[in-house]
Image (cartoon, rainbow, N blue to C red):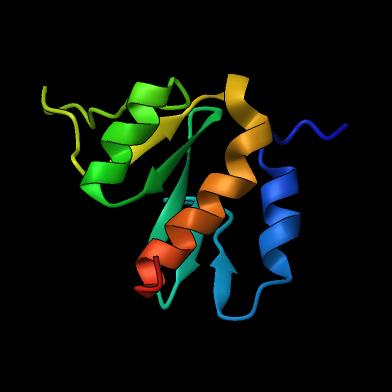
Length: 103
């Protein structure tokens, strides 16, 4: 098993046309058309979804609100903890579709 918690996501999205997996310095995550739709965040995953969907994911117990340090959770981002790692690809795909406007 890799020491990188995101190795499976990186491998999955490396094969998807039009998707860029950022690595190295700065923000690391997955982009579509130059826009980040999933971000690697302190061993967890932060995905961009419709605000209503964010609330559904939090209510289901799959996700947590994400406060970027402002004291106010972001409406269109949800943190998927590493305890739900088996769902990361599913939520990333949903986020990619949302970013593409096909969700």
